[in-house]
Length: 452
Image 1 (cartoon, rainbow, N blue to C red):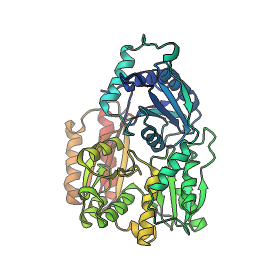
Image 2 (cartoon, rainbow, N blue to C red; image 1 turned 30 degrees about the vertical axis):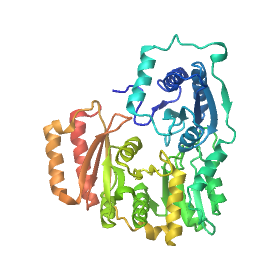
Image 3 (spheres, helix red, strand yellow; image 1 turned 180 degrees about the vertical axis):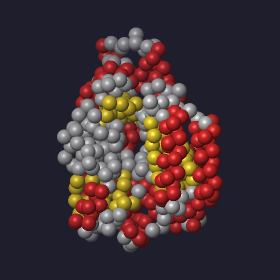
């Protein structure tokens, strides 16, 4: 069991264990040790971050830790998470580090790693990093003189990433004549994203592009789609695009301000790829949280879905293992593996815009390819993580609900990967019914293992 790493790196409140400068330095030292091969060449690790105030202290601690192990650092500053993965791979660095807590509030922060190929680390490497820190095995390894690492700033990293993104958009197309509302969440994409869409010819109404260190994700971005919804209606735009703090996910809205989530975006892109015979094995990879409407839409189009556990890393693992090229999450985390190694909000938006251009249809019409079943998610705090189905009263209730739903719905119960929460998700035809059932299950959970 991992003690530091969660489903997406090490996370926590900045300056509180484990998200301290001391831990950042140890993570840097351990990662440098693992990624430093036996060859005599200079080794390099890329470090990037989002716009959080605490990014400065964690960045400096990581740089110190990595350099103290004799590895050089390439500092790129604020850049989307997928941009750091891209720079790591394109510059042939040994690894990449992202300082970000994604869609969380500014007081939180996180540290996650990419390997040289731009993919997130597998569990076994994260466990090795933890073991090195806990065992203190590398405390005495301290290079001296010319063997100490150096730090370099890569001033054109953002420009390199902008060029990469533009090259993922079909060369025979542009975005001229399109009006786009773009919310960058006062995060890592505040410079890059507007430049990409403007350079492709779109008229951009930028929102959330004035970060001050504390306003990242604050009432803006992909967790607040109502902002782009209102702005699209006000400016009569063709589409609204909302990124999160590190721009690895995207939520959009159509020309009427209606939200289009990750499931709908995947349905649009997957059915388009099926038509063009570019969806490998006619298969989309999604998580167990995706709406059943997505399964129905893909079946109608002649495709199928493979489901994974929640977390984009598990989606990517399944894609690589099965030879698939499109996958993602309802939250807007989508991976177009032919172009990128990780979720990329800007790239995903570009793929969606390409379908709109190719079909000459508004987003509202394209989104009708999928009809979502009513879905409700209820959380309850717990004091222990016990197998729910070993508690007879709860198991009986779950089986009763599943029997009533039949083939027209489902029950999904899982623990949060980062908080002491049990999540009860139910899909079905009747929103009132499924809400009632979810609350009844949570009430039973609270009675048996609820937080005191």
